[in-house]
Image 1 (tube, one colour):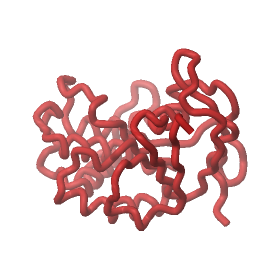
Image 2 (image 1 turned 45 degrees about the horizontal axis):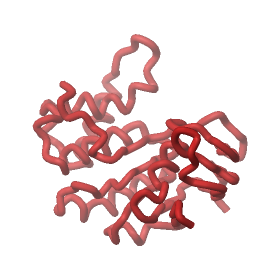
Image 3 (image 1 turned 180 degrees about the horizontal axis):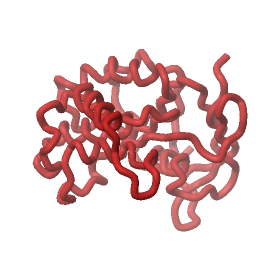
Length: 214
């Protein structure tokens, strides 16, 4: 059986001291593929933000493990909803993707040739070759979503957290997501929020339904 990497015990979390999710428990394992479903406002994004440390734990615990030993955190990649991105920020596709490697740099460090190669490989994987220098404000919704996906996966994290990754995705590229996720899932556990039936449903190993009204 795969090792557990995330353990959520009786978790309650929310905003302004008001719990959105209450008494939630589940585990995530190495190379897991967990789908989180539920109605709008049910608490799915709240859960993701709590797992990422962006919201405090009100009650309960979140524990992380590496090779069976508890650790403070895991190397994590995150793809937010596209609506949260400032398109006016002056940054190119390549710079966004390289930013996914920034946490591995020492203070005031520079990106290496190996980093550039990794970024190039990931940009090509996402079908963005030729757009490396384009500002994100000039991208279509699908191109921006693919750029953010590239940033999330470029560092080969232990855990990847995706909030509706197929939103705004080009139809032609959406059909490729299953193959991309299958490759990513070989070395990373995936937690994904998705509202609709999609092309990667066959990859899902576990499902969690959240509804704050329950």
